[in-house]
Structures are given as C-alpha cells and as structure tokens.
Image 1 (cartoon, rainbow, N blue to C red):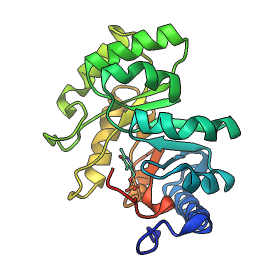
Image 2: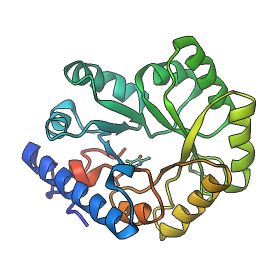
Image 3: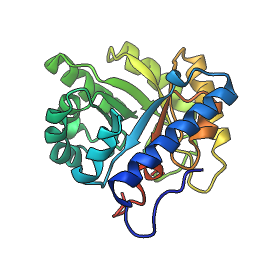
Image 4: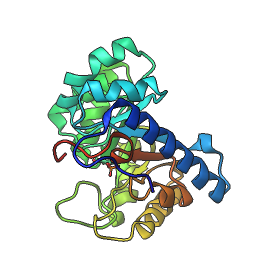
Length: 236
Ligand SMILES: *Cc1c(COP(=O)(O)O)cnc(C)c1O
C-alpha cells in the first residue's frame, strides 16, 4: 500500500509526484501478477476537493486522466487547467442529477454513474444536442446499500438493455463502490460477472485502499484519490 500522505496536508507538489509514481508501480505489479498488460488499466486520478495548485504538479508528472465527483466543482476548477493541457481527460465519478446532464456532457469525457432511466434519457438528449459522446458506465450498487447510488445487481441486466434499446446509449462498462466496511473482492467479482453476461468490457472499480485487488479481478479503470493527492482537505 501507498502511504496516503503526511499528517495534515497533501505534502506538497513533490510528494504527490512521488505518490503518483508509487501508484503506477503498484498498478504495474498488480498487472504482472494478474498476467495483464499494464496498458489495460486506466488510472483515474481523483482530484475532488483539491484545488488547481495541487492538481498542476500531478499533470506535470505526466498524469492525464482525472476524476471529479461534482459537476459544479469541476466547472470551477478545470477550464483553466485544460486550456494549459488540452490532452487532459475528465471523468465524472459522482452522482449526476438530470438537471446537470447538459453541463456534464459538455465537460466530461467519461461518466461513471449512469444509474436510472431519467439520467440515461437526459444524457441521450444532451449527447444528441452536443454531438459529444462521453464514455458511459452504469453504476451498480453491489452491496445494495440504501444510501448509495447505483442500480441494484438484480436490476442491472434490464437497465443495461434499456440504456441500449430505449435510449440508444453505448455503454462502455460498469462501475461499483463496495461498502466501506466490506471485503471488496466479492463486490468486484460480482461486477465482473454482471459485465461479462452483458458483453461489457469496461470495469471501473478499485480505489486507494483496494485497486490492486480490483486489477486482479479485471478492473479496466481504477479511481485513486488519496494515494496520489494525500488526505483530502474536506470530506467529499
Ligand atoms: C473519492 C472517490 C474515489 C477515490 O477515493 P480514494 O479512497 O481517495 O482513492 C474513488 N471513487 C469514487 C466514486 C469517489 O467518490
């Protein structure tokens, strides 16, 4: 495991570059262990709550894919950073309200949190309007937690089919956030199973604490925040 950072702050720009390198090594090691090509895992650096001055050094260290969990926060932070680095890709990893679908389609290259018909319909409409097609993941609530977003595992097949057939959406894969107090591996295995039976290849799973386990189960996108940026200044 990577040390998630110093005691109070993110530890400064050099610290985040060192942590990024360590995470990349750990991803490569996990891929070797799993007999996978390290290029088959996309590292999404989760920069939520961190200001632009903490993100710049991570871009300078070569990272190009970032995750944010709020549309408004991303709108405030990213336009300037992206002007300086047009090759940066942004992924939305937090819940989406249908009244934010337009902004989300305009801003993000991938949306990991499609989980209900209203959102699927809003995204389809905005993608047609913008002529812009972010990569879409269906979020599955693998732990069936009442407070958590995501379609229930038993409803996933029907929702994926509805996204395709009713809304004409191309779904790239599935995403999950296992319960905080649970062993993550069975949740990753369940997500992989649902993806396989729906012929989906994308698997967005694994965070700072468990991205190696997720890679062993086939993760194609790992969402890693604190292991790169240090402790978050405010709860997200
Ligand atoms: C915050 C967040 C992450 C990153 O969490 P860390 O434990 O800091 O790596 C990953 N996925 C989602 C959906 C998040 O909200």
